Length: 281
Image (cartoon, rainbow, N blue to C red; front, side, top):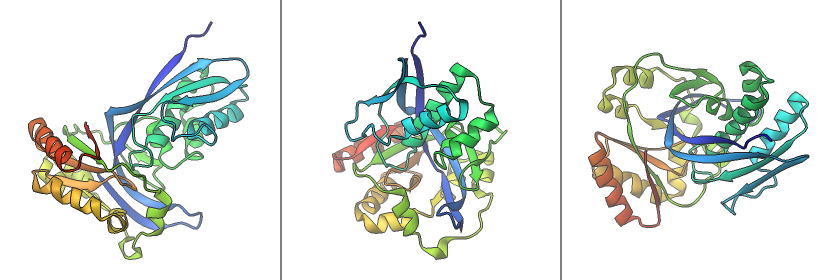
């Protein structure tokens, strides 16, 4: 009998997100950085059952039909010719539609788990399969600090020593559609990227990193949800070195100089905005 398989699916933030061009297929060209947050991860268990392709989840807001995990499994089965015998149990910790990459990370975890077991696809083939599922999925095949261009699939991994970052997440408890955020992007913000974040991480000074934290999608989302502006201002007023929206939002992240400062801000935000979900990473 084959033992059950287990995989963690970490969240991510984008220290910077620059939209560099629109594409005719509806996607956008990006200059973007990924920073994984293993302290906030979903867990996926794979149980082998004959002639089965099912998923159970602790979050009832995530229906089985159309779930990205099953999409990933179906595409893997088609690409390899393997008959599914897979029952997935997904334990969600990452908020849904939050700008933290939860769904993409789950899908990549399914691909990693299946390919580790069957050993059929090369790394290149797996990456090609991943991008057919979603723009962020290739990143999560190997979730470590990275920079990306294209739609997020052309990845570059820094070889220098990276600084430790104290990250605080504040999720307001409502979802934001990524497609909505991109549709409402101010066209004047579209333009070439630069190496500012790469250079700042190489120097390793938090103040320099904070100075180049940015997200082109933040403006339309904060305009639609003024609460996010209030939360962001509160983070900065109480000592965060940087505060910004991750991905297409609505989750905000804050960078702090120390764990002590991070915990003080966490307590303050929790008291002022008790409806928010707060994560220390």
